[in-house]
Image (tube, rainbow, N blue to C red; front, side, top):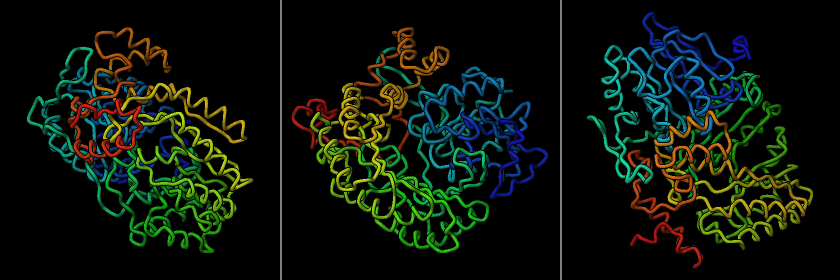
Length: 549
C-alpha cells in the first residue's frame, strides 16, 4: 500500500491545523494498515491527538505511513496483539531509535505505548518503552500530553519523573525489580524515584463510548463504521481478561450518544458494526433493534461483535438476517455444567439449545460456538459433555450449520485464574474433540495449542523476557524458537515451564504486582476460592489455594 491510499479515507472528525511550535508525534500501529485502521482504539487515539493544535501527528503502519518528521519528539504504539512486538522493534529500527529504552539519548523521542496488551501486563515489553499508558485513553491522553508540554524542554530523566506523576502513566525505568534468584520468581518491585508505589490503571466511567473516526474501503472490514455499545462485561467469567481488566460494565446512553453516533456514521457508509464484550446485554438493546429495523435503514449491513446466549431471540435473528448477516457467534466454553460453575459461566445447556432453535427460526444459516479446553478443574468427562451438547444442538436445530471454535485456556493478569498454568493435556483434548465432532459432521476449528503456550508466556512474563523476545525475533516465530532462546539464556531467567505450566501460589510476587487493576488481589483470591470449591477431589491438590487458609 502506498501513502496515496490514505486518500480513500472518509473522516468523521476535523483534524486541527498544528501551531508553529507543535510537538511532532508519530502514532504507530505495529501491523498492516488494513488491520490497524480497523482497530477502534487506534482510531480514537489518533483522532484525539490530531485534534490538538499543539501536536503534529503522523501515522505509521508496517506497510504505509504519512509524511514522517525527521526527529519526532514522541512515538506512540497502540498494541492489541502480543506477537506484534516484532513489528514494534522493526518500526523503531526504521525510525532509527535504539530498541532498549536504557540506550536512548536526549535527542531520541520518548517511546510510549498503550492498549489492552500493555495494560494487562506491560512487563515483557517494559525495557522497550519509556512510558506506558495503563487504561482508558479518555482519561489519560490529554493529561499525558499536557504534562509533557510542561516538561518539554527538561532533561529526559526529569521528563520521565514528571510524567510518572500522572495517574495511569507507568515509567518502567523508574521501578526496580529484584528476583529470588536469577532464574527464580520476582522477589520485590519498588520505585527508584519519587513516584507511586503502585500505578493505577485509569478507567473512564462516562456513558458516551467510542465510535469510528474514519471509514475506508481499505480496512479489513471494508467501509465499516463501528460503534461501542458496551464496555466490559457483567458476567465476569473467571478466565476472562475482557471482563476483569475493564471493569466496571458500562453502557452507552442510547439517545444521548449511541443513536446520534449511528446516525453520523450511516451518512458515510451503510455498514454498521456494534462492538463490545457483551453487546446484547445493553439494557435498551431491544429498543436499538427497533430503531435499526426502521425502513430507512433497511439497506444497512449489520455486524454484532458478541452475543450473550440467552439473548438470542427470533427477533434478534430476524433483524440480523434483514441486515445481511447469515450467522451468529456465542461463547459457551464447555458443555459441562459443573465446569461452567467453576468458571462462573452463568449458562445452561437448554439455553444454548434454545438459542440455536431461535437462530434457525429467525432465518440464520449458521451458528458458531466458542469453546475452551484445559480450564482449571477440567476432567475427561467434561469433553464428553461438550460432544453430547453439540449433538443435541445439531438434532434440535437440524439444518443449521454448526461450528465449534476451540482454544486452550490461557491465564491472564488481573483475573482470578492468573495463578493457574496451562494444562499440558489440553493439546490431546483438542485432538479428541476434533476426532469426535468431525465424525458427526460438525465443523471443529481448534486454535493452535503452541500459540496458546506463547501467549501464556507473554501474558505471565516479567521484564527478563525482553532478552528472550529479542532472540526469538531473529530465530523466527515458532515454539521451537522460544525453546531455543530459553536454552541459550539458561540461568538468566526461569525456564519456559515456570511461566507457562506452573501454578503459582498466592503469596508469590506477580510480575505485575505494582500495577493496580480494577479489583484488589484479595478480591481475586475470593473469586478463585469460589471456583476451586467446585473442583473434583482429584484436582483439589492442584489449586493454588492449597497453602492459603
